[in-house]
Image (cartoon, rainbow, N blue to C red; front, side, top):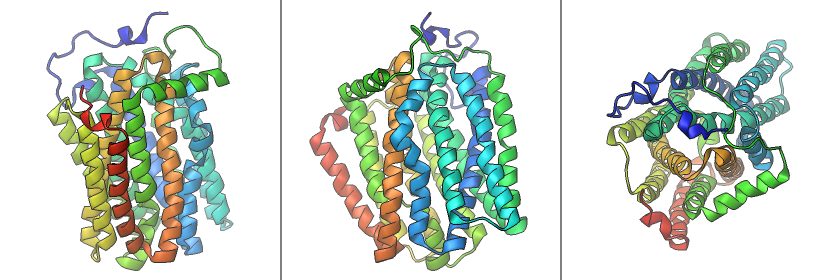
Length: 417
C-alpha cells in the first residue's frame, strides 16, 4: 500500500498559504464541517449536564465527579482507540461513533422529560459519550494529514482545532438560551439532531480512510509500540508533561457553575456566556497562529503559553466581577489554544501515518487523565477552600509545575522546527 502522505491533495492549490487555505480542499472542508456540528452538539450536552448536576445536587464535589466521569474512559482505554485508528478504516470509525452519540443524548432527554432523571444517570451517559470519543478522536486526528498537502499541515490542524473553539462559542450560549426558554429535555433532543449533518459530512469524503502500510491486527503489542515511540520522542513527551501538569492543578471548567451561582450570582444564560468566553479567546489565539504562520521556536511558545495560562487562572480566582471573570476565562482558553495547536503540529511532523492514531490517542490520554484528576481536585479544593481561593492557589502551583518541567527537560525551551 502506498504511503498516505503521498495521497494528500496537491493539484490546483495556491502556493501561498492563507488562513483559510485548507478549506479550499473538498474532503478537508467536509471533515471540518462535520467536526463543527458534532462538537457543537457535544458542547450543548456538556453544559446541560453540568447545569443539571448542580441543579439536582447543589454540590461542587458532584460537579467535579461529572468532569471525572467524562474523562475516565480516556485514562483506561484511550490508547486502544489509537490502535483502532491505525488498524481500521478511519472514516467508518468516525461515522459509527457519531451514530452511537445519539444514544446518550436521547436517553437524557427522555429521562428529563419523564421527571426521573438523577445525577447517576448523567454520570452513566457521560461515560458512554466518552467511550465513543475514545474511538472517534484518534481516527479524526489521524485522517486529517491525509486530506491536505504536508505544507498545509499547520494550517489544517489549527483550523480543525478552531472547530472545537467555534463550538465552544456557539454550543454553550445556545444551551444556556435553550435551557431557559424550552427546557433541558428539548435541549438534549436538539443536541442529538446536530449529529445528522456530522454523519452525512464524513460519509461524503472521497479520500480513503484506510491507514497506510501493512494491514495490522488489534493487539497489546501495538499499544506498547505506541508508548515506546512517544517515550523516544522526548520533545513530544515534554509537551505532554507540560499539558498534564498545568491542567492537573489548573482545571477550572467544572467550577464555572459555582462562580456563576455563588460568586457572580447570575443565571443559566450568563453561565452559558461563561462557557462561551473561552471560545472567543481560543479563536483569537488560533487566528493569531494562522496569521503568524509557522513559528520556529515552538518549545518556547508552549512554555510562554502555559505561564500565561497560570496568570489567567489566578485572575479568575481573584475576580469579584462577572465581566472580569469573562476576560479571565477567555485568556485561559486563548493560551490553551496555542498550546494545543503546537502539540498537534509537532506530533504530526514527527510521526508517520502508521503511528498517528496511537500518537494522537496518547495525547488524549494525557489530556483527559489530567482533566479527570483535575476536575476531582478542583471539586474537593472548592468544597474545602471555596472556588476562588482554590483557583488562586492552583495558579501558584501551575507556575511551579511549569518551571519544574523546564528544568527537568531543558530541550523543551530550546526546541525549534
